[in-house]
Image (cartoon, rainbow, N blue to C red; front, side, top):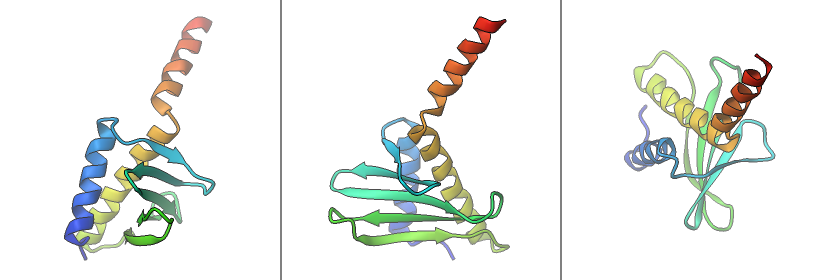
Amino acid sequence: MSFPDQIDKLVAKLTELTEKDKVDWQETASLNTYLARVDRFIVTINKGGSEVYGGYSFQILDHTGRAVDGALATFNDRPASVQNWERLRNLHDIARRRALNSEKVVSDLLASLDKIA
């Protein structure tokens, strides 16, 4: 089953803006969960389960922290499910990289290795 239209558009827009470095993702106390504050809302992306086939959940929270909508994607043989899983996996991956500032970390590590050589 595909995501509802509004959730589909939201995941696409968040992915696009995150890739353009316009959405600020942060770590949470929960491992593999990242959040972004957008206006008066919070969105979270979470990975659960195994490394390869784990599921992803996406939630929209209102200003009180109440979950008002979201989506879940697990890996299975149905094409729509695989597509949803891949889209949330991609959003989770770029949110994680932004939250952990991985681009700077890799750059700093390369600079450190250059000093050794």
